[in-house]
Length: 465
Image 1: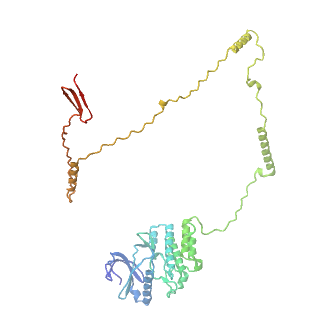
Image 2: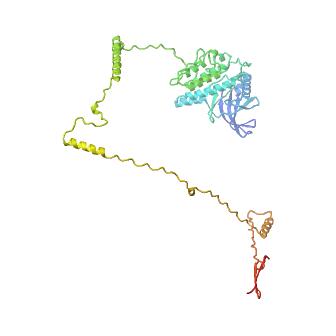
Image 3: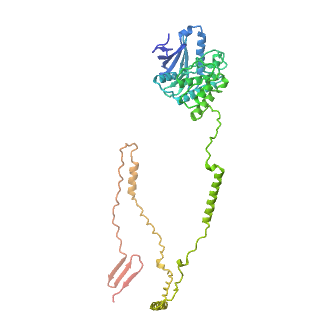
């Protein structure tokens, strides 16, 4: 009897629903109540499998899966979180992959009659081959031995694929490597004979890609490679599948990394044809002979070209005609024949009168102007005026005392609304200066006028006349 929803497992994991059920066990979605209610996957073995004659082998296989997953750390491989047992049953708690398998995607495309996305399938296979490269690079190498669309899940959050179900995974050279296990149609011929190796997983990837592209489940063919017909797909992909599914492991790709490189080259160079066609002998078609191809035509053409060259040379070097003297103007006019009558006399008289007229003399040249140096026009140096010093501010002593008293008399603790009182400035009291005698004293008496300065410099006395 399997687990029921809302059932608590080991006092920690609460079962939500069943995800997958097979011949050996089931996978459930659960909640880890002791780890922030995080989702997880719980895998168990069926009671019927434990009651069979192969219960020991099944439990050993279950334990091998847990041990293989614990040692792995890859983004495309779910991690093991716990391993527990209750009574005769054992459980593995793993990371939950929320999504669906590639097998479910094939069935959905078949129902909706959609074409397979070839480029996306090639990208998924490249990621799958990178995961197998990681498994095969372990020490010792880990062989999955059950690669198929049902064991490849697509995470609905990231869109990346993850390889699950490591129940058949074995280390190369282990004690149980000779066991015949796997899914018919996806197993390589050597795996069916109990001799699985790393290139057996490469064979399974080729069959898986063919299933994804055609939508048809593979049949068991152990005597020839897979040659799928892919109409409308760029050439080269069918050749990659054919090489990956060769009967002999030596004829396949050397490892998963080499097959991944071939797929990447097919994606980057879609026009490249991986199946090189045999060389074809090229023959030039016979063309009709033109009239110029005969000997007579060639001679006529050569003569025509030669005559054209001679004519062009003669035209270019032909002597040019000289211009007529009648059309050229003379420097001085002359009369060829004497003019008779009064007209000739008038012409001579006019010529003499024109010759006797004196020619106008050229105007005298203007005297050269010499610049006169004017000292008044030269700007004189004037020093910049010095700024007058500002009068010093004289602060009266009572003002200084009042400011000091207000500063030192402030309270130490005051509120934010405190505003000091403005200082009081005392105006100085005006005092009348003491009486001082005038600088000059004049006295008048009977003996005259006397003038005396306070400085005691001199005295002036004048008597009366």
